[in-house]
Length: 113
Length: 107
Image 1 (cartoon, each protein chain N blue to C red):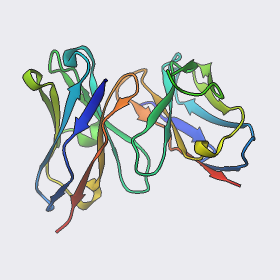
Image 2: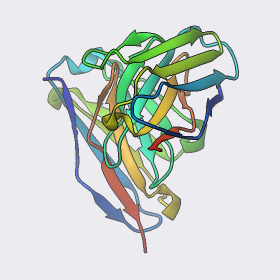
Image 3: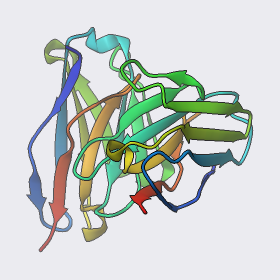
């Protein structure tokens, strides 16, 4: 079946970077854009950006410009989201998602000294 | 960026009730709107896409309507499993934007 499986939880110190992976299966990876969304505990959903796995083209929310990088490895059908210069406010569950309605299980990133 | 204003932010209702949640876009988005349900600790689940199309496997008690700037999600007869948080999402353009969410609680 169509699914996205994300990497496991991460704990990072302020100022560090984190790279979350999202492995696609059950469909042609390069045929659908991947979006990244995050959710802080008890808060709403926040769209971070998108990537076209075929071309590698990306678009980021202004809030994350300069700190986020979305990449992919088509040979293993995997998308990546790297967030740098982490601060405590980046503590959240990070999701990858593909239209229509296919979401990864989420990856908890905790930023703490 | 397009702002999505969702209301109400919370709602108390009983099993069997009919409930309506609305989203208003700050500019026209045609029908490029989806509705999601999220339960604690789970990823969002798509209920409605293109404003009024029911996602496969979603019960028919869920329906969506609207076009342009005003959209509605209706649950015709609440079931116990429907108590959750609901979000709208515009995918008319980037950046995509979510509504603030509506927490549906048992009265």
